[in-house]
Amino acid sequence: MDLAKSVGTSMGEEFTPNKAYGKDAISRRPDLAGLNNASVPAVIVECGEMRNPSEAELMESKSGQKKYADALFDGIVDWF
Image 1 (cartoon, rainbow, N blue to C red):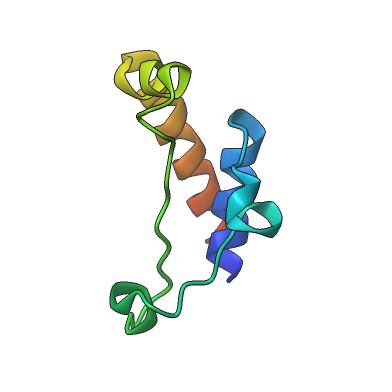
Image 2: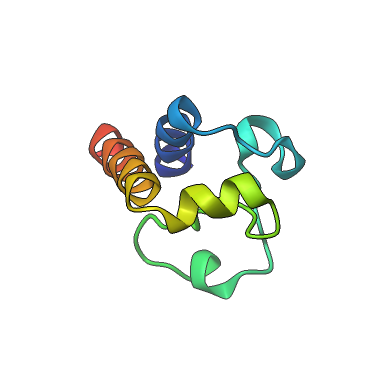
């Protein structure tokens, strides 16, 4: 959970979290074997909704991709 909080915080600084996923946009998922059977800390990051034109534009742009990569990197470094 610490990794999810660190990544969620770093992503939240740059991007608006989708509150549909719960508090701080973190949703525990008991139905995802890739996470539940992981022997190391693991998270799945959903960066946006491709059906949302502004989010799709950000995700498709080089500058948007760099923002996502930087935020993910910062979250991992913070957790580590």
